[in-house]
Image (cartoon, rainbow, N blue to C red; front, side, top):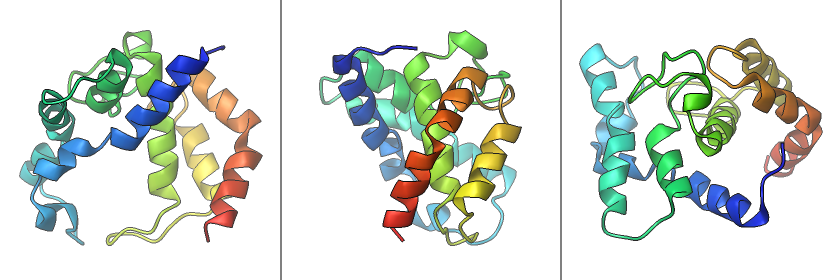
Length: 155
C-alpha cells in the first residue's frame, strides 16, 4: 500500500479533526463515568454527522471529510453512521479508525484505565476483519514498535 505525500498530509489533518463533531455534544455526556444508555449512545453516534456541519463553514478536502464522517464505520458493516462494509469505507477512514482505537485504548478515560501497548495491539489484532481492515492491522503490526516508542515517550 502506497499513499502519496499530499494525501498523507490530508490524512494527518483529518486525524486531528476526526472528533470535531463532539463540540456539539453535551460535555456532561462525554465525561459520563458510568455506562451510556442506548439513548445516550445514539446521541454520541451523531458526532460524525455533527462534524460535517462544522466543516460546512470551512473548505476541506474529501479526505478530511471522509475521515470525520466515516471513522466509526467497521470493516464488517456494524459501524456507524451508515453501516458501510469493507472497501466501501474509504482507505483514509479505515486508517484513522485503527489509530483512533489505539489512542483510546492506550489513554486513560474517566470510565476506564489505560491499556498497555501490548494489550492494545492484541485487541486490535482480535478485531481484524471485524472492526478493522485486515491489511491496515498487518501494516500496524509491522510498525507497532514505533507506536510503542511514541506511547512510552508520552508517559
